[in-house]
Structure formats: structure tokens, C-alpha cells
Image (tube, rainbow over all chains, first blue to last red; front, side, top):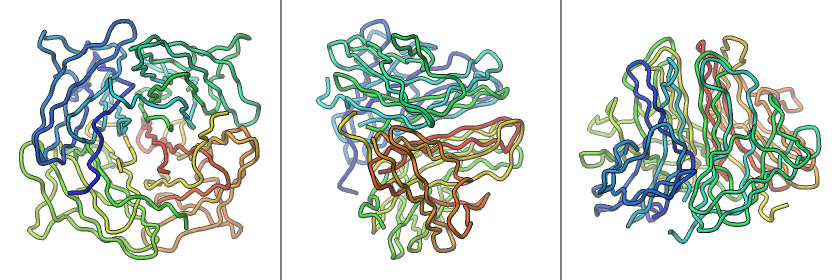
Length: 122
Length: 122
Length: 122
Length: 122
């Protein structure tokens, strides 16, 4: 394995789950996480909003030497709180081990799909 | 909060507000800013053009622990000057505290929308 | 040639070969590699999955002062194993010399094509 | 002006000028350059191919405190050589002063347009 395996803190500033879908491709976002470590990593996602306090405690685990393409709509804290649809937000991803994070969105609000992706900021 | 909270100076080289929209999705660009600091941050956006001097003094504030997805068409200086539509430009974003900046564009010039995004350069 | 010619280790967290194509544009992904060195470089791609051990030994060579836009569907190890279609995965790219890696996907699952690209993480 | 104004060497690994256009949006690529310096900068673009030696000597100047969204199809060396359409290639951009480079492509090969963008690698 390479000596440089990523970073523990990642940020995505443009978060938005499109509330509308068309065709057989559902609008969604993913944070794609690569864990090159041998050990399982524990993630916390902190969600920042435009007009209220952050939503914390969205935890996720990824086994060693695995990737996980996490749909942001799957994330939930222990009070059952989730990222709302159709609201601009941002994410901080903290990991207990170095990881790599890429963000992608598929938008099928109109009939044809659009894609965008970027590496997270670390 | 993580020890690494971003940078104070960000650059976006491909700015362009598409002048045409179709369907219910309006063509637009956003600079998505994440402020993980406890304090409010003060931003200045400097707009560079191909054929004239930069437009300065486009200020914006973002509260602590908040994100703001700023449409570039909202920005205005105290003379009421704004970024013109349909003109290639670039942006420098200066903040008094470290922030994270991601740039996205939705283009609905033709009937279906297209998306693009990138982290800013810092 | 510039003094800074890239990195030896690159990561792409959002890998996915769309299994469906429409029109005359085939859905595909590419890892676009730029080798500015005078010598040929030897690459190994390691493929990480969500639910099984990594696939290793996908080798590729690129001559000196050449680029190669490698379709991920071309990669094969000496047992003939390839990246499966329609499965979320991630890639680590190791090179014996510094290179530059950009990742792009063209998705024509629906009638019109969508594009996304990002520099790899290094 | 900020103390950190970019880099002198930039790389784009995924270059491709789509040879087909539809509708009123012409398929094209741009290297969007921001020159925050007071002085004019001199650029050289070196084009790398899959199967032949690099094309050198594509020069471009940008005035101080200006941006320029350079269509790759505009670039020409003093023998009149240009980047061919429909061929995978890569670019190295060298500047005599620090600049910021972002790459974008608009593809209207099919009826609807697709967009992609990324900061260059530096």
C-alpha cells in the first residue's frame, strides 16, 4: 500500500439532494470514500446549513481495504435526523484514519441526467 | 472542529453566467462557501475580466458554522455594479477567516440541464 | 520540462462503468494519464470494492512524453480479471515515476450524454 | 492582492476537442487562465499525444489583472500547427509568472449539451 493514504478531514461545500427525478435514474448525491487502510474506519459527517445549527452525529463505518459510495440520503443520526431534500447544505467528513473522499451528484430533475464530481477539499 | 478549516484566498478561473434558461431550472452559478469557524466571516469577491479592470468591493458575510450557496448574480458593490451575464470572467475570493469554496454551474441554455463543479484553487 | 512532474500515487474514489449506452456515444470512464518523463512508466491499478477484496495486478505501460486515455474497461490482470460493469468501486494508481492523473466519465444511460471530470487525489 | 497567486506549471491530462456540435452551442474546450499579477504573463502550452512527439511552441499572452478563457482550438505555433479535433491529448501549461488554470469542456455531440470542469493540477 502507498505511504500516502489520504487525510482525516474532508469538506464538501456544495451539497444539495435534488428533490425531483425523472426516468429510471434517481437524482442523488454520493460521498465516495476509499479506505486503503487494513482496519475499519469510523466516519462522522457534520452537515452545515444556511439558517440553522449543524446536524451532527451522522456516523458510518467502512471496512478495511474497501470503498463505499454513500448516498447522502442514507445518513441518519441516533435521533433519526437526516439531510433534508432540496436544501443547500455543506458537509464536513471526519475519519479516525486517513481516507480519500470524492463527491458526485446525478441530477435527473429534467428528463435527461446531468452529472458533476469533484475531489473533496482536505 | 477540525484543525484544518480551509484557506483565506480562493480562485475560480472559469466564471460565466449563462444568459439563457429553459424549463423550470434557471441557468446560474454558485460559489458555495463553508464557514466552520464559530465567528462570522467577511468575504470580498474580486471579479477579473478579459478586457477591463477588475470589479472590486463585492462583499458578503456568512455567520459562524453556516454555509451559504451564493449565486454570483446576487453580488453587488456599493455602486450597484454586478457581474454581467454572458461574459467570461474569473473570481478571487478573500476571507478574513479560513473557509472552503466550491464552484458549481447549472446551464439550461439548451432544453436539458448540464452541471459542472470543482473545488476552488487555494 | 518542468521540475514538478506529478506524483507516483493517485486515487479515484468514485469509479463506476455505466452498463447502459444510448446513441452513438458509448458510456465509459477513462483515467487520463500524462507521462512528462523521458522514460516509459509502469502503472499498476488496484481496484477496491464495497464487498470483496481488492483486484490487483492490472498493469499498464505508457511511453515517455506521451499521454494515454485509458478506458477502465480495457484493464485486465494476468488471470483475465476485469472491472465489472455497473458496480461501485474505487481505484489506486501506482506508478514507478511521477505522473498526472485525471478521471472522466461519459454517461449515456439516458438518451443524452452527461460528463464529469476531476483531477485524481495525490 | 493575495500573497498566493497560483503556480507557474499546470497540467491537464484529459484533453479532447469534440469534432461534432449540435444546436447553437459549439462543442469546445477552454483553458481558463487568471493572471492576478500586475504584469503581463507569457504562456507556453505543450501538447502531448498518445502516439507521437509533443507539439510545442503554442504561445499566448495575458495582460496584468486580466483573465482569458482560451479555446484550445485557437492555439497555434509559428508553423501553423494546431491541436487536432477528435484526438485524445494532454496539456502542460508553463507561465513566466504564477497563474491559476481551470479546464472546462462543453460537449454538444448529442442534441443536449454536457459540461465538465476541473482545476488544473499544479
